[in-house]
Length: 373
Ligand SMILES: Cc1cc2nc3c(=O)[nH]c(=O)nc-3n(C[C@H](O)[C@H](O)[C@H](O)COP(=O)(O)O)c2cc1C
Figure (spheres, rainbow, N blue to C red):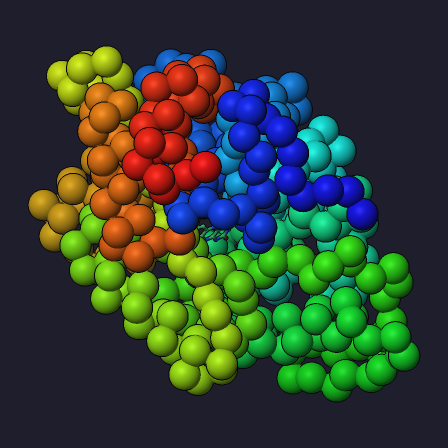
């Protein structure tokens, strides 16, 4: 098994998502798919190629972050940008990233209805072996009909999707731990004489991003990390507390909560705000409206609300916006930590360049504030 701590360019020993001593674990999110977290036509260097996305992952490791996490997407959202139209499949992508890194947690994301746990048990163990025990698996239920339709399927009703997920992940965990063949005759997932070897180096971290009652219950019961996408810190302490309490009281389990955040950092606040405005002015309305429709925001909302959401999707993927000078960005990250989040999954408009600047200007402030080693 390879080591999970390594020396980075900061000269400090860092752990991965599981072992890091940092109060606020940090990762990079959504950089295996076109558009990243911004539905905008504003030009940038960020694009989906193996050279570019693997360079982003290596940079994340070099700057001492704890994890990288891709999105699983099978179809884009149209418009001028066809947001998410190009994406790498995440288990195969994670295998490549695992081979090019040595310390950081490598995420992969799987859609429950389109892939059988027997396949994921073996593919996951393979990535886990390549990485020396660094795989984290985000288990998503699949809600976008155009994606699921490509597999000849229709998404089931919301809560049924989580029932399927419950059977699916129970089988996955058994395949990762049991040494004798077993049968499962489930309502949604079955397996005859199921056995998977080799086992992972250690049980990969499991993640889910559901915040509905069924989603929270699934996460509390099965997962190690709850992924949220809250665009403001107000009320987040209650949100985090409730999820953790459900996990502890109902299932006797400890859960970490990580929020998605989007960074726009510049020397002056004015410049950072101007960059944000450019993303909004060049927003891809068609792609954003399609995305919102499928999230169920479009059909239920007034035009004012739609405008607000469009703006969020153009500028920050509707995640927590971290905008301003390095000092202001660091302050907001300290506030996120105080609100109870265990980590942030970061998006950047132009990942590689902006991460390099973030390493130089914001990371030292996070170390000074004591929230990141
Ligand atoms: C941070 C984050 C990452 C997500 N990643 C994916 C993904 O890669 N693929 C996908 O189909 N859905 C993804 N989702 C959607 C969720 O899996 C889920 O459908 C959504 O959070 C709504 O769940 P709920 O109805 O239980 O609250 C993501 C959601 C969040 C908040």
